[in-house]
Image (cartoon, rainbow, N blue to C red; front, side, top):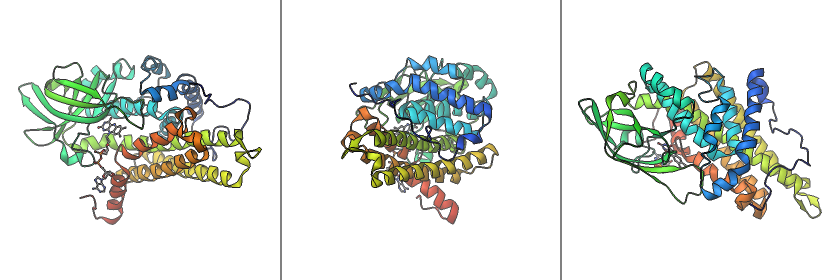
Length: 398
Ligand SMILES: Cc1cc2nc3c(=O)[nH]c(=O)nc-3n(C[C@H](O)[C@H](O)[C@H](O)COP(=O)(O)OP(=O)(O)OC[C@H]3O[C@@H](n4cnc5c(N)ncnc54)[C@H](O)[C@@H]3O)c2cc1C
């Protein structure tokens, strides 16, 4: 890498953390201290190699044991932090690197969340200690080649019970971490009752195959897999005992959708960080870009989007802390913040001119990564329609 893309220590900026309305002050003192610790850890370990890993489409597995030292997995259920804190941690991860944030979102939110919500107490006791310690890495296998937005009713992967063994057959697509994870939760339709069941599948089992999806233009560092399951035999003891229909899967997705909406805040923060510094440091016509009114307008539009998105997420997370957040509120948040994110990263990309399309300057990576966040965990359209159904009583989804 020939270009120094790290912030220059020479120029001091006002509002250095970009937190224009002081949202971090809503956290307790210990949460604020933890947030700063996490930010420093990400600055030291993740950000310096994030562009290189993205360009090479290679995941930094050496960081996995180190991240356990942060003692941050399952921040709300296990550690007792607030949802606002958990959200601001998503922001910090995504600000450092959206791919690394997605690795965490899959291992912690989707995979660990599935075990916490859908496994029996006995299963949790057996599996969760290694998962919390990052000794076992997990993935979440719901989407299929032919089942995306309609996956709730359209699962084609099947599970057939023979005595105390389940036999899984089918295919999954897009499954993050699954080329190298130890375990993956596979959702399959029970042939006997047609309902969705969940299974903890050991990725070394015969009949399990995961192939990396190549040539992505977004979240290149995340290893997404096409999985095929051919007569994979899973013991009944590995069926998550509290998953008996898609309604149960939704209990996991409601919380992870909140996390993805927070990621959209984090990516806007990243775009704002990079664009603002560039505007202050880059000179044209003998003056910094920041001295031109139209450039300031673009930066302020970015800040407005970022701040409005953060405010929405803070309120939703407070509702979640009280157990009051509804599915449609998470859906609106995911749709709204990701739409603002797309505007914000496009403004940032334009503000860097030609350098905005080169990964070395970070902005091209940020711009491209927004596309995945816009589409995963329910696309913009589906989340809009979930919200539309809630406010009209009429479904426009099918
Ligand atoms: C980088 C990445 C990582 C992912 N990680 C995982 C993972 O770890 N595990 C996992 O299970 N899945 C994962 N996914 C899958 C993701 O959740 C799906 O891509 C998403 O749900 C959309 O499904 P689809 O891609 O099949 O699009 P489709 O459902 O085929 O949709 C295509 C387009 O049609 C629109 N559309 C569909 N139906 C309607 C409708 N009724 N009304 C209006 N518009 C509609 C959609 O909004 C979209 O614009 C990941 C995806 C990506 C890109």
